[in-house]
Length: 244
Ligand code: ZN
Image (tube, rainbow, N blue to C red; front, top):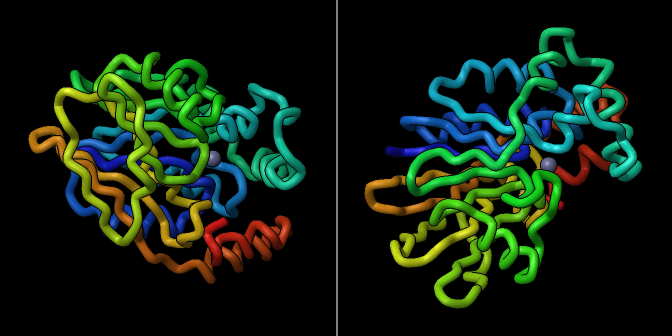
């Protein structure tokens, strides 16, 4: 089984299309939430994700606020501005679909579990070893995939927790030790924040237990122009060029 892992697309259609093209044939797609917010194409991204075959989709915090099922209180100024714009742009059908997105975590098979923030709280961020330890203990499968931070990361638990260092380069491969537990973030498709502006996604092959973090160059200029044309804050366009 070959899974494509997509997280934090954030209404960036150019990044999503480039990622899908680069990933090639997969047996199933795992979408870890935050389809909307920040970017200028919320409806097109939702509809593209709806078109994916064999997809398991869970919601992110931006999806909940965009759909109007949670308030913007926890959002900073930029996120708030973008999600308010998103809420006015969404079609009625897409807003309903977003509101009905299932909450994570979701167990996928005997190896894989997915969540947006963490397996104990969909909105919690995993930044450091302490967060990761709590998450890995809560996870129900040997491989827990998460998003939300927009930063690729690999944590391994084998009697003790270790951070294996962030995946780097265009194609970072890691073969999982079947005796250990892992907590892995394959990065953000639509708004990377690790200093690499390329879109990020993951590929996991269950037979070989190999996970690959893939970085994909995309048409950043078009995504930026759409953000500016929509009247969204310019910094949301600028950050795409630097991956922050
Ligand atoms: Zn996000």
